[in-house]
Image (cartoon, helix red, strand yellow):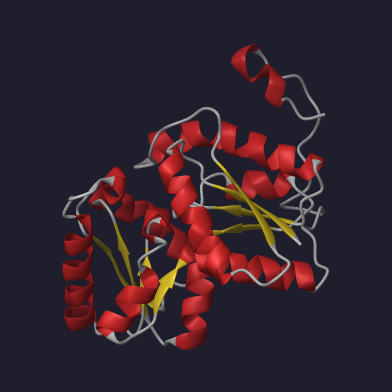
Length: 244
């Protein structure tokens, strides 16, 4: 099985960290191709960044489709471009936020999501409603550090994250924690051991869900919501993205 793992931002050190977390949980025989787009923001922190990450993300999905990959993962917790990627791909496409929420409900009655900056909270709250998990989600919290602080040696990001998880457990009475950023992928196991409850990383969750869906022989439906885009010309800088 070959899985195309796309980090929609262009920070390669984060892509490498995400790839390592994915490979640590992948089944024997699962090959993971981890890539970043050639264009786009260095981090995704809001709707503007999200809009500009989508063309590069879709380009990487299209390349992997041509190479015959069995599944795709969108490795950003905003799940940017997920529906567009599903229209483009016949192989299953899994977003890490949706995957994490699904798995959390299998092991806990409630969860709190802890993300980076408070500007990310409204988007994640919208995703809980879109995916139907609003009744399971106690709260979406921000530890108040930028995404790239997770890549900086000596930053306080991990301490701020731990402090916010402690507050979530005490104040929300949640039964599980979801880490609301792909850049936290390497922290889940240690945090679960420290706090004594499930701590779910969406990258690992997405790998296992892709393996399950592919193992069942399922592909993306091309009837209705995820039907292929209609062929038409695109103009200007987007000409090369025109559906064929």
